[in-house]
Length: 307
Image (cartoon, rainbow, N blue to C red; front, side, top):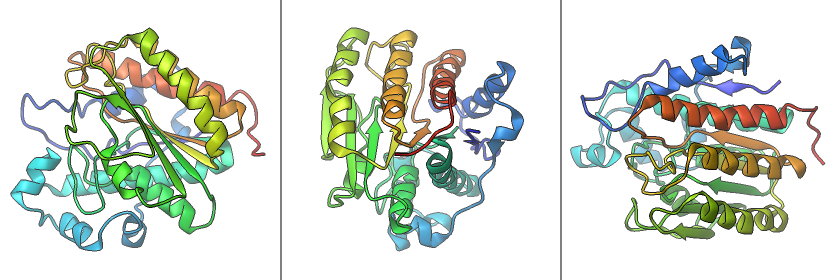
């Protein structure tokens, strides 16, 4: 049974007009249950990981200051959320969920976090709505436990996974692939193992052609023991922060390709949420639900056995 982590009970109170739709987390889980895609017993609230696990990917001093709400005003502005205890708890829950989903993926084939994808958090700083880098923490934990030897991060959020690229810049055990809008945040990019920069206003056909060109080769050449998929839906034409022109169907085809290409190769897959900022909340919820339903459908078709 594929299990899904949720951090929805830690809801950050945002000022009116803030672009981050916190409501989406609870609504996505509710919609998946309403459609019968999941059962309530598949959803879990993760147990918090320890400081030692977080510090596999983050500076101990940074984390100590962050969890005690001692980050400076400048650091908090860069993150983009108000300073609060719930920000720390939510970030910790999200990272804990991705660690647990990685463990689950090794057993079940796929683990899904109805949060996560906080790829703008660096070793010693946060930015872009990201305090902790959940994928980096989970990947480092798997490697430290010797559960895997090679990790592939497939980051298809519209924004480059700059924090992830920086953390793993000198780590040959983790290959970072980021396919993102060139003319968008962050304007000073880091260097992933492979960056595919897409011009603004790229449409479905061009985007999918590029993905088909690069992804199968990466799966074959890297031959990872696990894949982390950052499935941001801010690639949509409707997104306020995106600048690409993908349709809902194009976004769904993207997800289907990533997930099915991993499944046919028997690679354990962790799906994390990433960004999504369309003005209509229904659009954000539908796009994220499409991603998670495909993961459930494709990996749930038969019992998963690793090669």
